Length: 576
Image (cartoon, rainbow, N blue to C red; front, side, top):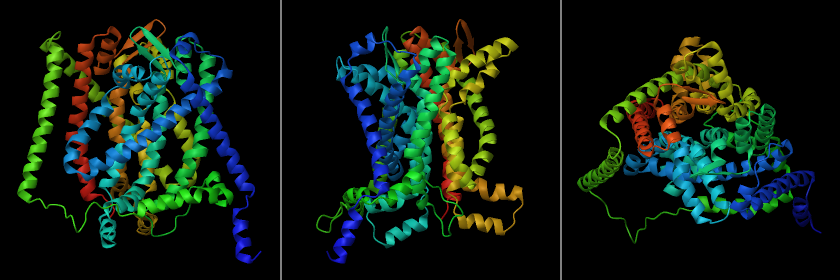
């Protein structure tokens, strides 16, 4: 055997790292396939006949089913993000429609999505539990997709101009520039938002796994439905077992999924100098040391490299695209804007016509008044949580060693279902005779404050090392360092976190302003309690009125507050 042939054979021979990685991969695939098989072959009759058990030994299977739903929803959210965020960032006309639509989607309560979609999914798979599974996955998707899309959209709008000029100098097509510049630039922030989305999904999985259709409730096996059953039965030991299972699942997907992605994505940082510490992943190190696994994956890698380097340019010298004059372009803009406004006015007319059949003008003023109360509550809470989490997020982002340790803890805290804090809040408020309008408010941000923390960490980690070293060499005072350097550097990422935290807080107000534990029920004045009471009473006109009012507040807040700040960040605070 000559030397080159021997070298090739040696590269193909498996080593100990191949064995370890294959064991992990096969184990994960077998577990996921087993969970998927049970979900596919289960019928609705089986779901109704087999009540959920609070036996802790059932938790491994429930955890597997919940994890599978969340991973499918995360994959769909990523696909949605790449398509929707790109359209919104690249097309000025599409942006007019897509960004306000995204504002509305993130403000619509998850229970609202379930009410409209569950019947459709059940009709798609009659008699099978697959319809209920699809409805639960869609509900989790609605809790994961919006902040990822906002992050990706904001990153595409903030790509440094000099890098765009360089890509034009290399004559990259739009397809090549997207995969070789824009997606890599957006990846670090997107990865942190994916982690936040996964944790945010836990917050809503309790509602997503117990689906009500008319007078019938379908309970899907999972940790969320387990927690819901434990709350109903006031079984504190079952709640403790569920929290332990959640912690183990979060640690598992952090080590097997997110930690390798974070370590891999670190190479996309805008650095001209070497960093002092790069995130590491034992699984990624193992993958890089394999021989057989690397050889098996090499065709996929080559295929992906081939695809993203193709020009895929629609332009051709033989079939040139027609040029559009400035005047024609302006008229197309006006027609498009008129179509968007006409669609919005028609929707408003349909809502008013539906609500006016049973409601009077006074109901609209009542909902508006409650909306202002919740609006003030949301803004105050987001401001207070920003004061707490921005300094902590900056510190974590600038100390990568600590970020590696804090990451799973933050993911667990973000995943902690706020429902479990309701008994503590109710008992405390009743015991101390406290005012519900004040002391129920913190429940609104328990699950949403983490959007600010995760985005600030991502923003701080994206600051180039050469800028950090330059700021250190200038020996700025602490106040000047914060005011002139760090706050402007993280401001675009903070805005994304604040927008999604605000939308999430509006959504969470529906469960946080109307809380019960046993026979004790506490209500705070606000739009969330208004919608919750209407939902409990089955009063659909008031549900529509409440959700419409909430959507209007979110859109006005985004247009009057967040959009101007976004434009300021794009024009004045981008790193070029």
